[in-house]
Image (cartoon, rainbow, N blue to C red; front, side):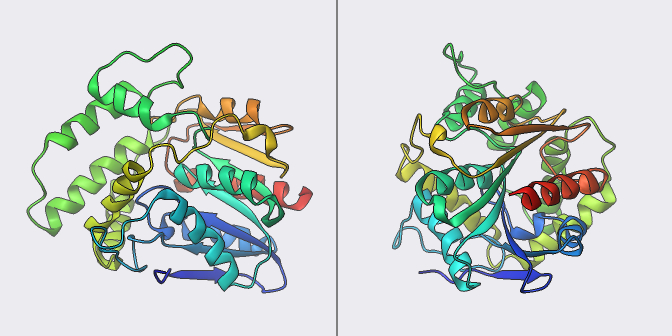
Length: 291
């Protein structure tokens, strides 16, 4: 089993929140200010780096292949390591997908579920994305596809040669951050540069995160279909009004999970900029308090 880097904030006696970041993403993408607001609100907050990201172990995928089931089980391993039989799960993007699956499979471990900028479990979001990138039509009933700006950027990124050095890599990371940020709020390029430099410098191997794509390909049917009605945990779904990657997916999640509430954050895209920290933290604190 790989070693997973994690850290916690707040008092050990407070109600625990485990923050689960998205695919290929380090745990520090949960912003310090947002985490601090949760801790100040009386929560024990845990964030961690997925395997093959940040300071967690790098896997030789050719020798030790894994699937997204293993990435999901890492969430439970983090909980075990912190002595948690159950916790409030807060997931972003693919982290929200993992939270949904854990809530279905291991309901006793999920006190409440918060899903931010994510897609419905079993909705085939990955296939929607690939069809959009390939310029193929979406079958009737598919999830909404990403924005044209998102699609154009990633088509260009896929065709581009690898970055030559640290500077070029960070510039490319900033450009990606700008697209994910969306168009609803001003983009702070200086703040993004500081964050991307931090992500670059703390990663054991920045390229290893691409193993998450191999993990998805190793088990394409990772997501069970038609199971969200089994989620018993009180669920909050959050989506920004300017979501570029998964626009409208939050409403689908809220429709499929009994009793789920949908909150829309004005101006927010697919990232968590300072302008939304207070609103997001207040929503999570209220939800985890009621739960």
